[in-house]
Length: 122
Image (cartoon, rainbow, N blue to C red; front, side, top):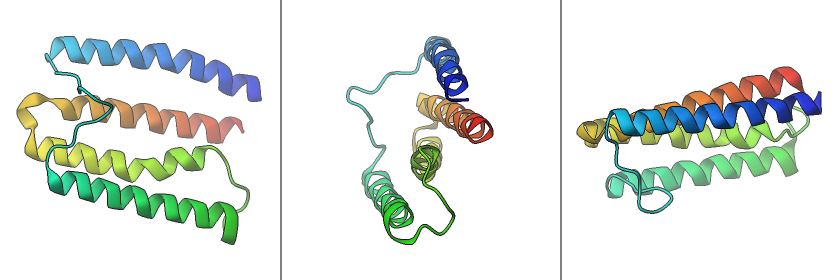
């Protein structure tokens, strides 16, 4: 089963990169200069708060409580989803004309596909 996950990742990454390239070219979306650029201060501090809470819950689950069973790598991806959804909302709300939110939606879709595929195979 482990090799199926590797094959899935190897197949998903090129599809994601081509889709991202297509969206960027079609809608003339400007890429971020750094890893990620926040829309405003609310976006920055809200995203950092969401990441801090998500990582705290993730660490509590992994090392202290073990409420839902064994820790899986997909839990890390699940912990990042609130950040991605918050970023989509903030980009759509404050920079609708730049269409950056389309790239964020694409990232969220591929994250969800990865999570579902990983959970089904492992």
